[in-house]
Image 1 (cartoon, rainbow, N blue to C red):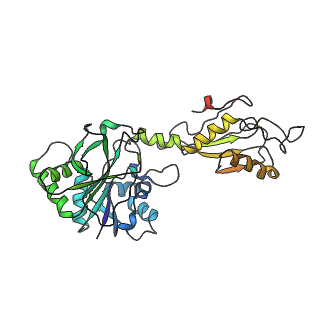
Image 2: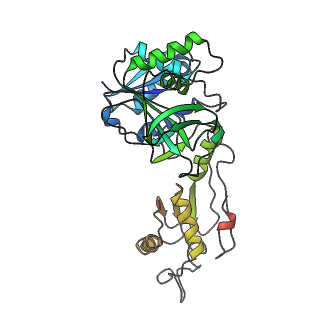
Image 3: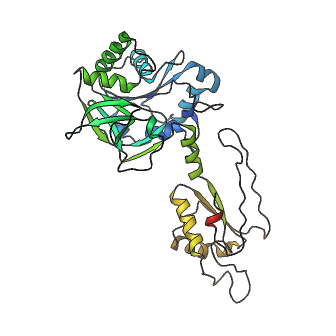
Length: 352
């Protein structure tokens, strides 16, 4: 039996005054925990276990929310621990014991997205990312690093020390639960100081000759381990309400020689700015005073220029437009921003 474990038993200290980070809502409407699972080929797993703690359940209804989120997935079950654990490795050990997990299993962090195809037959392996190939990685000194030989065998995993160009992404597979348990218990007996990371357990297994770990490279990776990284996601996924005349097209009105029926003169740099925002994840809502009869022609112009709007709102008043939104620690102030530009001018310098 193959089991996937998502440990969520930490205190989320890096996200102060908020719900546990795995319960936070991604800008696309999914919870972080949902996004964390999506990159894996989950069809290879017979069980998917999410481990949470009673304090989070009591305060945030964590178990109920998970049951609501994953109600259509019969593979998923919840492991409820009595209290916070000291480390992810402890969380995994307690989960193996409490849920009576046997055979092969994979561990996946709850605070990132990793796209990787794992083999149907799970072996000892670690998923990583080459920072020389992918240069958008932040907070590199806080990562763990893999030393990998030419045969894609992991020779060691080192916590928070740059020893190679390959970072670990928090996806670990074990061909048998007993391998992990032995490594964990061995380190407990050594009374090592500080937090016992899963990387410490794997390093011990490798160095003591208890198991060989293969290296898999992810094709995509998004990290949300710190509040700054999560805020960057929110920045990229903003919703932009974009006017048409004087912003995307040279200004015209319903009447006159150049009018809404024949005006196709685009403001090229502004169109490209919106396309760039869209490509980074932004949601584009087109707003205009043009009436419904002009929707088809407007949509055609937008499509020709690479803009695929979430919505087009027609027939708005030819007046100020006011956006009202709430703010909170998860969607901080200011949660709504107004940008007013001179007619037919470039918008790039005004975008925050």
